[in-house]
Length: 328
Image 1 (cartoon, helix red, strand yellow):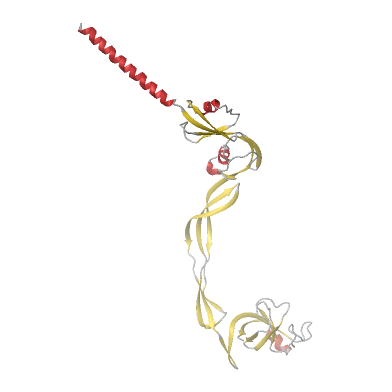
Image 2 (spheres, helix red, strand yellow):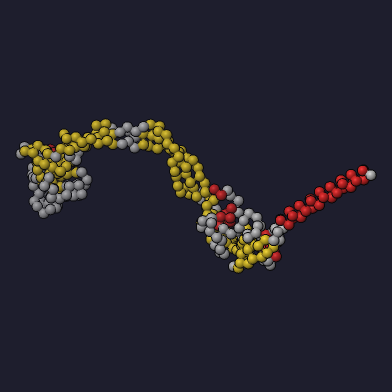
């Protein structure tokens, strides 16, 4: 009598266990396929459907929205959950310029970036115009630009610095090199960016000094007086110039200077861009003069001294002189 009762109890346990499993399965199935509210944006309209479907394509079919070839859709969430939005993107023609060729393609991609990704390049290898986040519109022109970045090395000259020091013994305007400078050398690594094969940008990654530069030491004059046989003269600045001599009868001026005064000793021809006409100057060995004439060959730091004796002019020849531009 005891054996049949034990068998009956075991059967009841199995029956209860089976019923529990079935109940759990029904609850899980009911959860997965629970009714959901889904919003749909398509063809310029917004609609809302209540559905048990878990596949977005089935939801669109339920709403009577047909997807044509190359049409695409996107979810506002990672899965079809309650309150999700499905946006439909109809395939439209766009024009893509890529590697020198312009082609028309039909695409349902929502953004320029997704169209560019469909060209089977790594995202870092392409840049688009307009920007990747731009929404696709019919007939849009898209330029896909190939991007390449390389590391390049160059050896470059380091220009030597010039250190200037005032020298009260040297005339204002003059300089004297005390130590010659020497350029250095460095190795520079650049990150170089090319777009469609054209260099567009460079950025320094690192620098290595191969040979340091040596500074040049230059004395700059600060003295503003010059001693003459008639005493000291104040001057604004001095300069080294190449000097020649001429006679009043030289040229076609018939003894009249560019300024209209007669050519004579104490008149010099200059380049007005270097020494303004009307300036008073002092040349050691010649004396005080006025810049009143010009000449076709007198360019830059050249000066022509008028002399009244042909022997003096010939013996003077061509030489370097120090010219003082006198203070007013």
